[in-house]
Amino acid sequence: MLDRSHPGEELPTGRLSLRRPVPDDIDAIFAIHSDPATCLHNPSDALSEREETRELFQRWDDHWRRFGHGYWVVRRRGSDRTLGFCGTKVMDLNGTSVLNLFYRFEVSSWGQGVAGEAATAVVEWVTERVPELPVIARVRPANVASQRVAVRAGLVRAEHLDTAGEDGLDWIFAKNLPG
Image 1 (cartoon, rainbow, N blue to C red):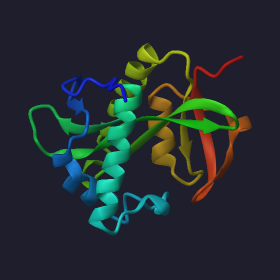
Image 2 (image 1 turned 90 degrees about the horizontal axis):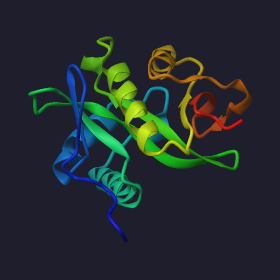
Image 3 (image 1 turned 120 degrees about the vertical axis):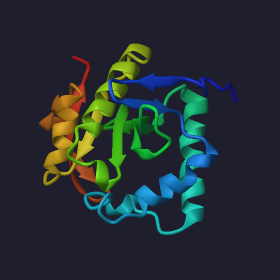
Image 4 (image 1 turned 30 degrees about the vertical axis):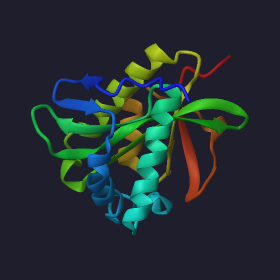
């Protein structure tokens, strides 16, 4: 398989540094994805076993290798502490290939604009590199904070695309929809 990713690439923002996950991030992936609060609106994403975490990391890494983009580790600039993860993955929505925007952050970083800053950077970055695919975010109707992050990142409500998700109704926010 051709590796399209650039492992050393960093995506800086005003306060944050985003980089591709590496195997040393597995503990942080587990810590954030095993916290019931971070998966409150998406309980099917919750991890309970370290082996699940290694499998999740491998899927993230495979996506980077295949497409040259994916989920990023988010840290404050100059810090080694992982705040969370933000990025996109290619998926199918109603027969159309899209980039699904994902963001999940440790509880201590909530309410500080970190998710919005990271999501905005990711959407700008991926829109430049993969302009042919729309970016979407699937958000639960009750998750108002996540809706704000999607809007801050430049996505708008696309009610006509709302769909049943694994954990309930997905409200769709989108950017660069065709037609």
